[in-house]
Length: 301
Image (cartoon, rainbow, N blue to C red; front, side):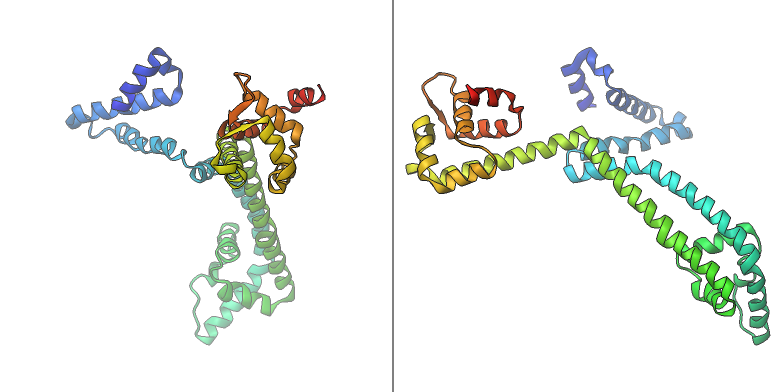
């Protein structure tokens, strides 16, 4: 309640322009009504459902963590891929079940009769391939879950060569083919969602800029004379010609002396030719992540 009141105080009427704000307000209002009229509304399943939706609000707070936000975004993206993957599995298993009903079922019956004659018992063997639906269940449990392979598939493969070929092809299609194909599409879609996620890209860019700024400041602490915090054009030129570490670092990130002059003059607002090295580091980071047109024009000029 306090969060909603503070947001409404800040955004005022623009608070209702966001669907997430409206959803939060609806959840809180319904929960308050549920507490006030608990005896009257305790049997309403809709109220209980909306209360459960309060947990969804936590996901928005958890997206502040980069890795967790990436997992949630990937989960939301791959649900459609999983749906089509399940549909593909259904079609593949339907076709394989029809083949199994024609090829594997007669052999399975012979094996069941031999087992009964020997006194052995298998609970599912007798109906493993008795119908298309039973065949689908059997193939799914054996090929995907790995349950009943030794009891059902191995005896059939050992008894008949054509049946072993059908089983081998089924394993190749389901286990080696479709499963890996769906997994690769899920990974690709998750990566695509990550690349298109503006929030994630902004976080990555911000962290990269912080890392670059930290490296430049560490470089300055190494080459700065007497812990100096001010850098001038003359000092910049001196470091470029005298310090191999200073020169090699900026060359490694494709920044030469002309670009360094531009970065210094860009932050020299009062025109005295001196700025703090923190300002210089910020200017370098901005230079690396901006359009090169103005920089090229300055260098050519």
